Length: 269
Image 1 (cartoon, rainbow, N blue to C red):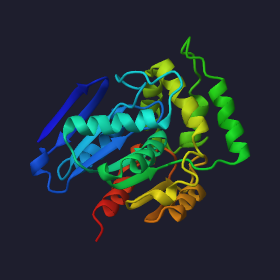
Image 2: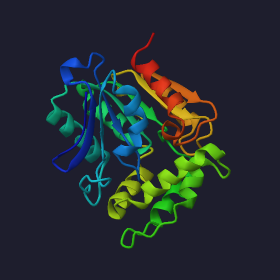
Image 3: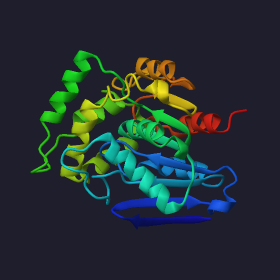
Image 4: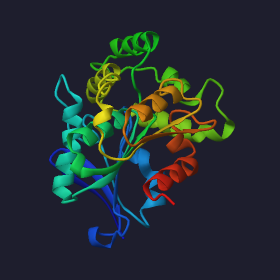
């Protein structure tokens, strides 16, 4: 089994698990959210690599990947996925995206349906309320990429809740460390796109040709259960699963629960 970090045309990626011809259950590609990197998916790769070929990569402006354009679009990020799949010579994959990665995953499913046989939009955003739009617009406007100065406390509070369980403290500290290692300009460009893209798939989900799972946590205040349920209703082959007691970073904080949901969807029955 391979487990390597590689680079291709400005994208850093990790590939783990059996070789292409030996991965009897196919390939899973993981796309992280704003402020994270391919390392976010370590719990999933550990779980799925014995059976699947697993690929995780740094999205544009994150980790060691190249910056997106100054005014990026979702197409720029979904094109990064398809270019990497071309390089790896993978005809079709199961695709999992978290938060901003969920938007990219849906966009890739719409733009390149032949490359995505099943997709999971995890903790995705969709058609925010006016209050939610105003809150995230204010956060985007307050970014200071020139200096890199940022108070990550409010972000972590949204992810973990104001009084996280004691066993969540190490995971909170690890994500705080990850946020402090961001590319400030890449984060800012991507976050501003994320802030205005919640309506990008309104009216388009009916075109999704593949089975789609919209997965979120019961206690996620920004990627709410109502959002996942609305997306599932709009997608022809959509379903929503809401994990009890979980929040925005559920796949990292409590990976066992998320891994079971992913596995059940990719290999039903």
